[in-house]
Amino acid sequence: MADSTPLPSSEAPNDAAVEREATRRSRRSFLLLAATGLAGLGGWRWLVSRPTDDGVPWPLRRVLDANGQLAQEYFSNAHLAPVFPKAQARAPRVNGDIGLRSALDAAAWRLRVLGYAPAGPARAQEFTLADIQALPRVEMTTELKCIEGWSVVVSWAGARLSDFLQRYPLATDPRRSGLAPYVSLFTPDEQYYVGLDIESALHPQTLLCYEMNGQPLTPEHGAPLRLVTPLKYGIKHLKRIGTIAFLHQRPADYWAEQGYDWHAGH
Amino acid sequence: MKQLVEKHPLAIRWFHWVNFPVLALMIWSGIWIYWANDVYRLGWGHTTLLKFFPKSFYQAFHIDHKLAQGMAWHFVLMWVFALNGLLYVAYTLISGEWRALLPSRHSFAEAWQVVRHDLGLRQEPLPARKFNGAQQIAYTAVILMGAGSLLTGLAIYKPTQLAWLTTALGGYEWARAEHFILTIGYVLFFVVHIAQVVRAGWNNFRAMLAGFEVVEVPPPAPLPAAQPASASSITPPLSA
Image 1 (cartoon, each protein chain N blue to C red):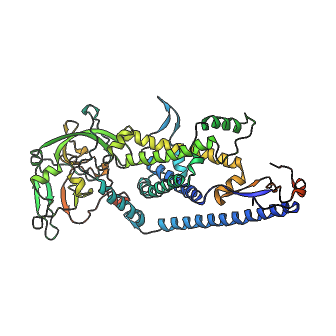
Image 2: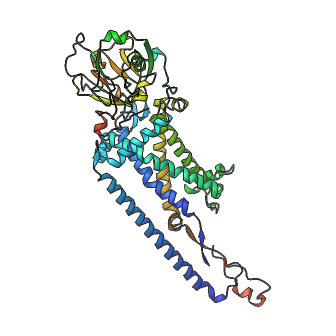
Image 3: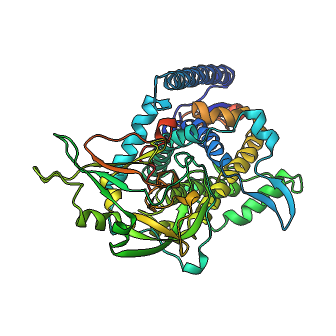
């Protein structure tokens, strides 16, 4: 352009040519935008119309599970939730009583554990609260995080699930010495149930908890024994544990069935 | 005479227009999540100037009881938001576009002039550059905000595995508040951005879509050696 020599008469036709080119390119770009927008809209409509997998369209569920697997790659027992001074501890809100609606008979309560048996019938073993309390006592003041978005510092005491499993090796298959990949917990009435990955279950901050803020657990907070793990949202902190089962397949999870992330992991 | 001048590279236009619906859906799913614990407000003591959000807002847009869907969408689209942002930053660095975007030490004084100009307090024309100081600051700030959203988002997504990050951001509750404040920041950015785009007009807007602007340029000066006789006769009046 710079080295061409314009003629006096060339200006107007040149402007017209520029305008024509501008119109052509604009039209092309707007059509592309419209087509892309429609494709995006179509993709979105396709997504939301997919059959649901536990409450969410299956492609979203796939991504949630992929996120969970990816997070597992970075997971480490050395990554610990921050701990706080005991004086900061507060009583958490009681959020729901599913699985706790029947009266608790503390004397008759037993923890039932179904050992890992991928190929055969599970070995069931029962424990009293005294059995759990005989394990090394761990106190920990951590933040309880509700999936709703609030959090509160609570002081817990109990036995590490990993210590329990070291004393009672129920997560391993005695014949093949393999470790169960999953843990299922449910309340005695089986109305509330959660699933955990074994890594989270064996983390040093995952407790079979019997005390909250220096007092034995009250029924609404999960007496006599509940799960506490700062690796998961509060929805996984199952209260009044009835049964713990070590499984080969990913177990059902009450809130995951309502559309939440099965991992719900921190 | 008129001329097409290339303004925004194709890649930047794609990043920009992909980001628009993705960020909108991130904010929307974020509101679904936020509803379940809607504790933030503007105010002090018992005085509340603005509650985030009023009940009427939730009702008008059916925000309530969508926590699970909100989280599902948020944790899917976060990938698109993050990848698009990272690709944009990488592209500006590799292509050299960052030179037009990054504020210089003059940008802040210039941004003040732009503000005064836009409020009608200053008559002098704005600098005729691709991005003036105010734009450089705004467009760089919004990228830093995007990085902030990713970091605060990660901090509340994995507060145990990434405890160092959550702690560095002031803890779990602060990270959530920061994540929210950044989102309010996008909304404010959007309002000003739309107002400025409307003000700047069609030519400017079209450049973000089609890439070019039509500008008035003086015709190239004739080569003196080639046609000295006609040189004076073709000098048009400068129009711009």
